[in-house]
Image 1 (cartoon, rainbow, N blue to C red):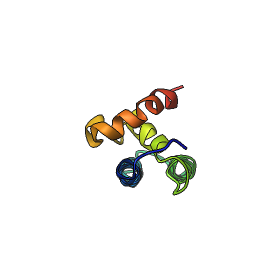
Image 2 (image 1 turned 120 degrees about the vertical axis):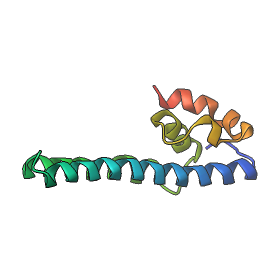
Image 3 (image 1 turned 135 degrees about the horizontal axis):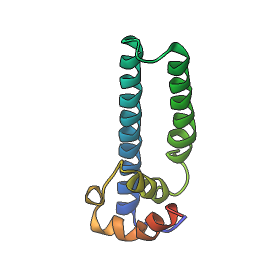
Length: 108
């Protein structure tokens, strides 16, 4: 794990939590819209079940693994920027400079 100043470490951990919440909100909004479609009989129960399974997979693979408590907090923040959960404006200049290379690496 790279060495971050205490200030940057605190900021990245805070942003990691914010990114988790935004990702969760976005996925739940998608799930809600699919429930609305199911409720209006636009999709079948089988399709709805597949949507729910996909949501469970997203939660386990991305949210729980990527935004776990231990590990380098710069990686999930960089990932969140690439996924659109966070923007460059959410970070201080110092924090952005510390993870700028991670943003490029996460894309690979």
